Length: 368
Image (cartoon, rainbow, N blue to C red; front, side, top):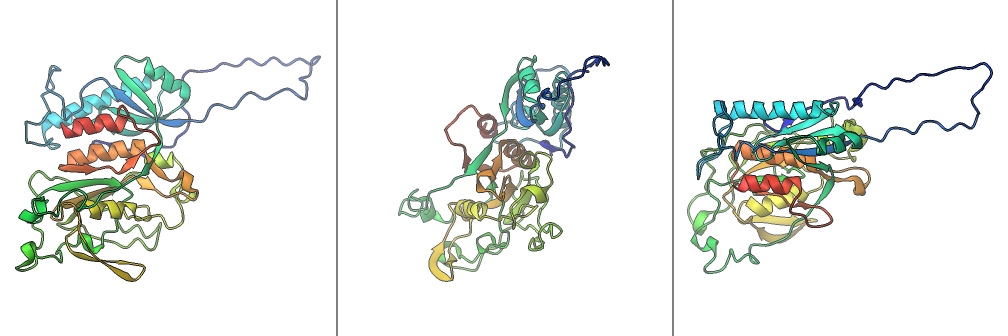
């Protein structure tokens, strides 16, 4: 995984040694109302963008490091020597620039569609980084909120000339869902769907993952944290499930940060991720029930697509503290592209529109 996830003790790393000389005098006593020295500013997570191209865009301009940018129509190749060597080169540069400001607890390395890293720093260190050679941008991490809307009818999928008039779409497409996880046993994600292609013939199960898909892992079943987190083995519809929480936790224990009922896995606790996932690629013609009442059949936009889930949104006891740390989202975007997804759904946003945030830059390289 090139968005390297690191657990660390988030102890402050001093920028320089501070020598204090205290002179005691028997004749002069310190006044009782003397103010204590101000407490150091609390550390925060920052996302740092470096100048070199990420793996998805690198054209081989550095001596000794072969190009890693895929040819048109191809995907990045994480098993290639060129990929591994250039990734190691970028991470070495990350470590060097971080050391130049006194070091810090690195949370993630990014190098697939965004060249940079996330680290826990003081505001002073973050300001120093902005002046370091090779650093393009430094952002303070923020929590974004889930958003979603749209329907097949609104998009014109179901009309006489719509894509569905030629058969259900999405075959051999992998959708990377970056959200609050998923309920893996949802019928819209069944490995053997309930619909019949063209309204006739037998049920059509999903075959092996399409070529170009290299992702693995299915992060469910952490019953030690939540006994309701049942184990689930990914299949040919739900290809992968992975969670990213280091930025959200900021070094704290999950039990001190997560709301009751949250899962320390890729399982969805609030329903948003399951909703967006099944909206994007849920099987066609699945009976839907709300509060025990049937409400008809539902379908995803691309019913035959496969799903890879990357959980970055978490529930906290105070709803205002819930959300999706940008640093976690960046790691998920990097991982999704490395795994070989074809589409990324990101129904997450802040309070105001921006086109220069780190995730926007990563999505530009991902699309390229």
